[in-house]
Each structure stands twice: as structure tokens, then as C-alpha cells.
Length: 252
Image 1 (tube, rainbow, N blue to C red):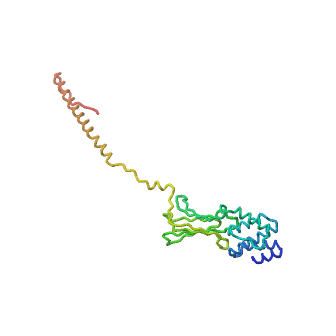
Image 2 (spheres, rainbow, N blue to C red):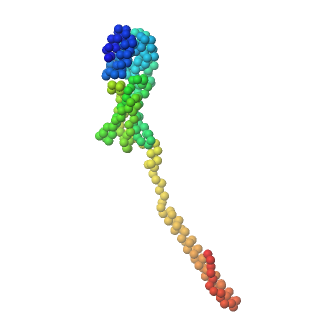
């Protein structure tokens, strides 16, 4: 399919060439080298048709996959000038990056792979895999688009992760790795490991023990008061010559 599209371009059949390149991009099992050739040739077709926006988009895809790419002899000077302009604008700060990050989401440990600053229509799916349990087991996740997330089992430790961004046919466009032995903890986990504040258990006992002398003393005063009152009443009774009226009832 790619070869037929190139032949159509060389025969100046631009519409047939463009349809052939689009079909190859969607359906053909292309290697990375063939994909680069497709982007360059399709950019030339867009230039010949006067579609500069689409031409620049394919040139950006070329440089995203391979920043050192050189155009073939088929490219006219006007396309080469735009290509170098796009290369200068797509500096290292704006180049494509496949980043792997550790994140805590909902109190759980996750690894996230994301392709940054990638041109549209280049990455079809992203795969992230991590080694766990001292490299005894590997977990993996593939997601459509430019990102993939992977939940780590407790306690959130991995022994290294790798990510790939691929074309629809499975060709590897970008790769990234991260070293292992990372432990992810929730942001509030530090509170879980605070040393407990210890309150001596005998403080309450001492307080209770200190109350007993006061209770005994108060009881003694009440008993002494009761006895004294009884003696006084008895003496008054005798001194007045009246018979005792009976026991004294005291209501507390």
C-alpha cells in the first residue's frame, strides 16, 4: 500500500497518493522506518496540494519520532525550510516525553505513564508494566490513547516499571523506565505512625487515695457531733426534770 502511494505521487496523481498514504496509516503493518517514510511523503503531497497545516502536522510527527531525521532528495527547498523551522520550534523543552510517575489516588498506590507533548494521531495505545514481589511477578496494563495507570498491590512497592507508547499496528514509538524500591504512602499516613501519648495510670489512684483522709475525718466529725448532741439532750432532759421524750430522729 505504501509503495503504491509513492508511485502515485511520482506520477503526480496527488489525490490517489493521499488516499493511499491515509489507507496505509490506518491499515498497513508498518515498521517505524516505513512510518517515517509515510509521514515525509504525505507531507510532500500536502505541500503539493497547498495544505500547509497538514504538511506541518506530518513534519512534527516525523521529528517527534526521530528528532535527527533528514528529509530525502524528493523534498523541495520550500518544504526543507519549513522542516527546519519546525525542528527549531520543537526544541528539547517541547519534545515528546514518556513520563512514569508514582501517585496516591484515593489512599491507594498507583503508577501512571503518560506521553507528553505528542502530536495528534501518532500514539494509538500505551502500555505500563511493573515488577513486584521482589521481581517474582509482573503486572501490566494497556490503555487506548497516550496514558496508562496501574494500581500497585499493598504495601505499594515495585521493583521497577517500564512503559511503551505504540502505533496501532504495535510499533514502539517511545519507551521509558523507572527504578524500583519505591514505597508509596498516603499523604496522611504520617499520623498513623505517631508515638502514642502515655498517661500514667496511677494518677487517678493517687487522687482517690488522697481523698480518703478527708472522708474519714469528715465521718469522725459527724459521729462526734452526733454523740455530743445526744449527751447535751440527755443533760437538758435531766436538768429540767422532764422525762425523756424518746429517741432523737435526725434527717440527713
